[in-house]
Image (cartoon, rainbow, N blue to C red; front, side):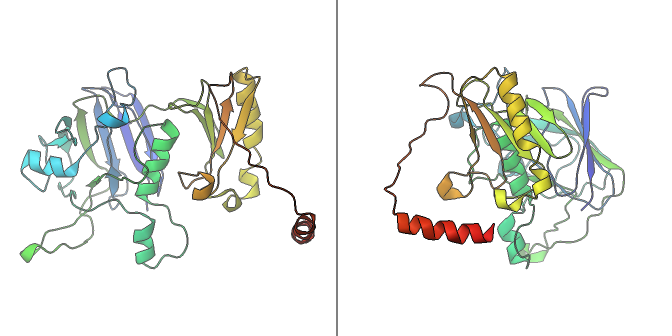
Length: 311
């Protein structure tokens, strides 16, 4: 899978490259142009959009407003999109208008985002990055209040899924060319604000915009791994030093460092991340119960000998 280019602005503005099998979030304000370039000509992009409030903050969970392909098909009375077509939200609001498309105009509005189960059905063993995972990782990083078990159907730019006689679908090679691009004009403020505090080649740190307390931040290794034991040691060496820097920068006198692994341990996103959560008072910050158990010394000794032999 190849990388793609994305840019937002009236003349210049924000830009970046979407790495292969990765995602990128970008805030686009009303009337701003979004240009997505197919650098290699044979790649597909799953495009999602989420509306922001007038203060460029996410809405409440009760008023989520996101790109909806079923409403887009209905709003345009068409399965295909072309310059002049609008992209509509689940609230039937126009989010984008397609201004230009230098490709043959073949895009898909029917197929859902790929996910881990889809790759397992295709014979992949173990973990594989997917558009669904990339979406929720970006949402989690930015604190956007979107349900973890919901993945909206994306606009699949340059995916070629023709509707055949009798209504059957087929996956065929994209007909886009290297350098083809799509330009969209935002009809409202869209996507996700990100408050990045630190980044290098191994990790990323940013503020959680649904914090347990002011200054609640996340530190995320860029190497993908669902659990701590899935991350190589060299991708972990800088995490605690960055957590320490965050605590010092926040002037946090009392704070918790939290990292969860697995659903029973309250992990919601299958990508390792560390929380630095200031505890300014009893009401704010992390609340913890510690149901200590009575010690069975024989079992504890047996466990000690077993674990020590494996270290």
